[in-house]
Length: 279
Image 1 (cartoon, rainbow, N blue to C red):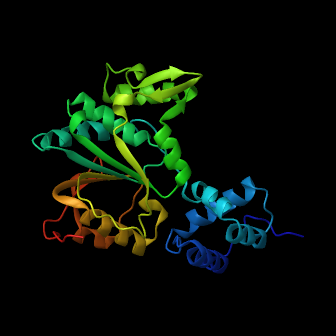
Image 2: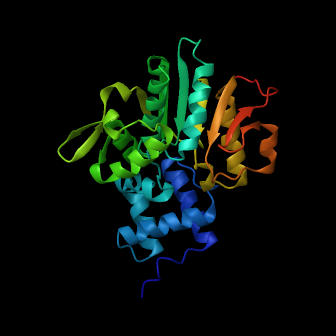
Image 3: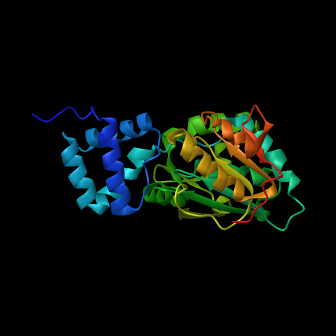
C-alpha cells in the first residue's frame, strides 16, 4: 500500500532537495522545512501521486513537469495594492528620486505581477511614470508568463478596487484596466517593467536600484538563507535606496548589521551606510 503523501521526513526532504539541486541547479536545501514540505504535499495531491518514490522519479526524469512544479513549491500570493498603507509611503519615497533621470526599481519575487503594476500606478499618480525603470523577477516561469500577459479574472476586480481606493480614494479600477472577453488587461501605459526569470538564492544581480521590493519571500527560507538573500538585496541597493519587505518576513538577528528600519509600520528599511561594496 502506498504511504500517505502527507508524511515526509526531514531526511527524505533533504535527499529530494539535494537531488533537485544536482539535477537542475535549483537550490531548495535551505528553504524553511515546514513550508517546503507543504509545497511537496500540494504537488503530490494535485498530481495524484501516492508515494515519495513516484514523485522523486517524476521530478528527476521529467524536466517539464518539474518546471511546472515550482509554483506549488514557492506559492505565489499577491494582489493589487496589497497593504494599501505601504503604497502611501512608497509614493513619498518616489518623490525623493524625482531629480534623477530614471528611478530604478526591482521587484524580487514578483509572482504574477500585481505588485509591479501597483507600483506603476503609484508612479503615474506622482507624475513619475516616465522615469520608472522596473525589473520584475521570479523563479517561476509560469508566474513570469502570467505577469507579462498582465490580465486578471474579472471576479478579482472588486477586491482589487477596494484596495486601490484605500490608497487612492478617487481611483477606479477602470483607470488601470481595459476589458475584453471576460478578462481585465492592464493598460499599456502601465506595462513598463522588464520581466525576467531569476533565482534569488543562486543568481547574482549586477544592477543597482533605488527601491527593491521583496515582500513575503523570506518566509520560505531558513535563517542562513535569509541572511544570504538579504546581503544580496542590500548589495543591489544604491546607498540612498530603500528595501521594502513583507509583513510576514521575520528577520534573523544578524540582519541588524545590514539594514535599519526606515518605517516600522510598513516594513521599509535602509541599508547601513557602512555597506557600500560593489557587486
